Image (cartoon, rainbow, N blue to C red):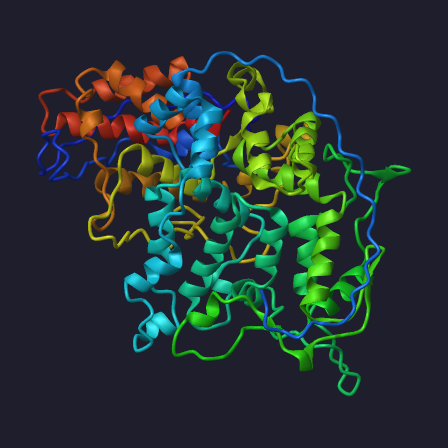
Length: 591
């Protein structure tokens, strides 16, 4: 198993030939032709190196709160000088900040600079919401059973936004949030699941550039979250039958959404006593906090429309605990929404939240193994945006993406610990965004890609548990990474089976798309007669120029093995360059 900074060699690559197709090979974007890619590459050989081994409730009672004192905000480290921005650096930045670079977006970053591009993204309006798109497409017709009791429209909506959304930074951040504020559509026990899950995505999108405290409040009252973690319908204790409040949401709220299981320094390191990690909370803390969230449920139970699935849950007073609840050294009492908000305030002011959330976001955007200094600098921005505001997501995003550890391309390339394995969904969207994938019918018929033998082994919003597809502390057992104490979350879903499935599935997408979801290769085909220009452009847009010399040579050899006189030569040469780049370890590990 290679280290993250040392992907295995590409020497096993064979320069095999793409066969011709019956379609037209002219470089015009339409009609688009199917690329024949059978026999181009051995998936097992290529990927062996990469993982084979707001409420209407009645909470008007008194709330008393005694809060823990947050740890002092650390002083950010001096900012080292970073080299001038290059096209490769712009592409690398976009691989961190979006679901994939395009030639136009690379040029935009070069023109405005990274900080300017981020500010411009913050100023963009929201793209069409998932809810509005589902409504416009008629998925709210209750007469269609697959709408009311199925998931009609969900996958199409999420792929549409991830690939074609006009607010790429917001899309990227919202999906990073979904990785640890997890809801999976398969775990929803309710009607109108596409709308429920779409509304939850909209919550993350709406608050991606807002404040983390507001996001916590919206997540806590989301009907989708209420169903997924069974807080919807939780009732106060009943001595007559021995029933107790449901503790799922209270537990995961602390463990996964805010604090983590161990007390943290502001640089993310674990606090210990005599070498033993100090726990953040106790089982009693969970039980006490669960009392606060009793009585929550949807505003009504009308299933004739999906409307209740995006309205924040309310407190139903007969099920709500109005007594006191003491957790983490603080007490709330009185019940209702006042108690819910007070409890969320306690968690938001806890010293763990800044380093915990900051490290999670760094891992999902930039690198699996951020230094303590990097975590500390981002945690400082979370704790105070410079104007005394805590939890400002814009400040956190800027701190993550502008940090020298994120922006020093040369240092990252030279490091054996920097970077992250691109997860399968991002590999698909990287291809789709890079090569202008569209769906003229707006059907976006990609579907569920979580099958581990035929597709990606991952799909947006389809995690089967609250722990998501991958855990932030995962390290592949028995590997050099584990021995070095490194984490590599994405390797949790990288196996021989999923790696081969990924290549086979991407071969079909690169070659012919799915339904009317197809790429426009015309700009690449214009370069296809010159393998160096073609591979260099694919390398820049897809791999941020990080393909090593030996990899570039191997891909060019494969491209040049397709004669320019062959049928559909420019199309097939283009396909070879793209597919082999997508399969290369140099691309799969983003430094």
